[in-house]
Image 1: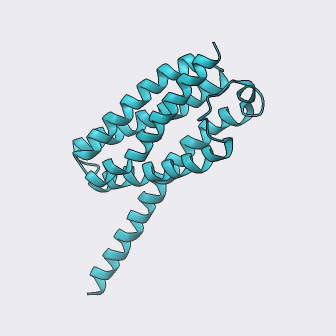
Image 2: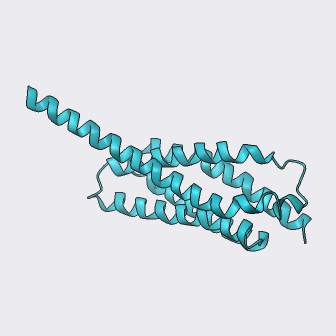
Image 3: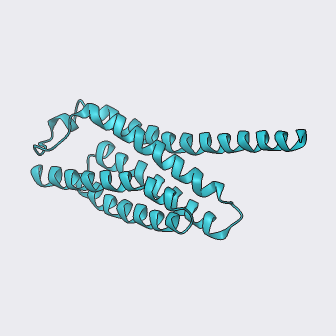
Amino acid sequence: MKRSAALNTKSAVVKAGKLFFSILVCLSAGFIGSAATTPSIPTWYAGLRKPAFNPPNWIFAPVWTTLFILMGIAAFIVWDKGIRDKRTRFALWAFAVQLILNSLWSFIFFYFHSPFLAFLELILLWCAILWTSILFYGISRAASLLMLPYILWLSFAAVLNFSILLLNK
């Protein structure tokens, strides 16, 4: 009985560590992207013409933080299904690709000041998220559903990016 309780406790600690790590990786990607974003907000970005539906700047940090946490939970759920499984490894690889693309967008748009290239990259990112969500669905429906707010927000971001591109030719 004591051995079983110890194993359950160890398993719970390992799972909590994996969850924490998964969320930390996603938040770190957001932090990397924000390093390119933050300096340009009061300067270059402030000078751009934006559509009427452009949200206030303060909304982006809480939205992205929430999305990165949801992505981390989704990745944890998939990882917890068993890393030895080929499908799981492939799905997590796809997840890593979309996470890298996510950070890259911030550099293209805000650091390099290129709404056009950022929009093209955003299309690639959107496809990578869809691909990841489909792969996650084959492993865990819950993990796939946790990616839904992310792809919806990114769809809005694509419209916003495209609108900024058109308004600032």
